[in-house]
Length: 192
Image 1 (cartoon, one colour):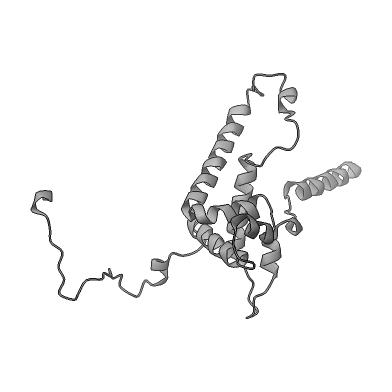
Image 2 (cartoon, rainbow, N blue to C red; image 1 turned 45 degrees about the horizontal axis):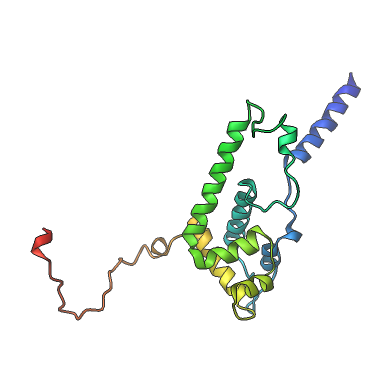
């Protein structure tokens, strides 16, 4: 009886170690940047920027947006052609893949088309900064700054950074314009 409980304890400790997957940070260019220090001794990426990049990478992978380099064997495993899988799990998996795809599309739209390319290259395809600089036609050593800006916008989209207005709650929000101090806009009576 005592042998069985020890065996169960060993199995449960193995299951616990298997249940918590670890990320290989050595393969990510973001992890390399997060370990690097700038001239002031601060990390090049904040925790929020690093987490935002890893969240985008996870959604990109889960949405199955990575390019295929080999044969798709899923049709053979599901019992033939036609794209039908197991009836009890197929729709749920497809819905979560579609949801991940939508999250990626919304995140890339939030940062804009100019910054989306560097995020896809570095975070999702794990390209180095030099390759991304060459692909974008940027000057040398500008990739770090552009990536930092893109990751900051991405972290703001995910709600990992406070917005600019929330940081300055004690200051009143004022609308600025280029008109003179006595300028008053004219209201078209036809619009009323």
